[in-house]
Length: 156
Image 1 (tube, rainbow, N blue to C red):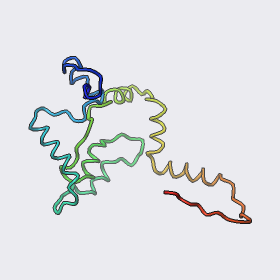
Image 2: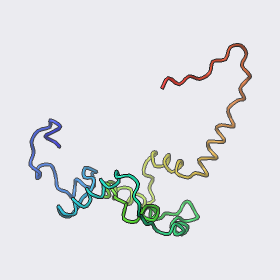
Image 3: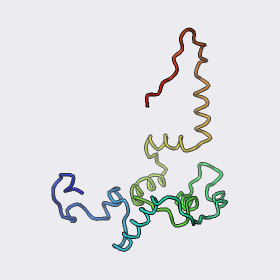
Image 4: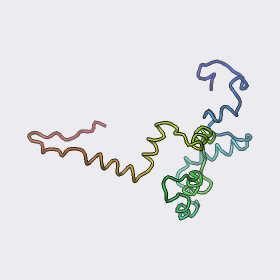
């Protein structure tokens, strides 16, 4: 990939060890051997085969207990995704990417950055709905237009 990008020719040892590349997000999926890599590639390609006649999923009622009532409580998002998806169909990419930083910072009670606050505001549907409705209600009423009206024309 480095050579293809015109950045020169480097031996794998010169690029950096897997222990450094996976947490940096360079590796989408780290597997133990070639057989597991082939299995992962087949699983990924199977997502594009269309509708399958047979499938199973977990009991969706389990979601009631996986997500806490108190929206401020942490929960295992991987377990939620596994429960929502068809059994055996989840293929997580970049699992090691960014793991240590956010977890350690959260454990020490420190804010990550302003982006995390914005994302949290958007994730909570109830608060987002209230915020959007407050904004929409603050818009002044429009006056009826007089004269020629031009309808919106979408050029796409």
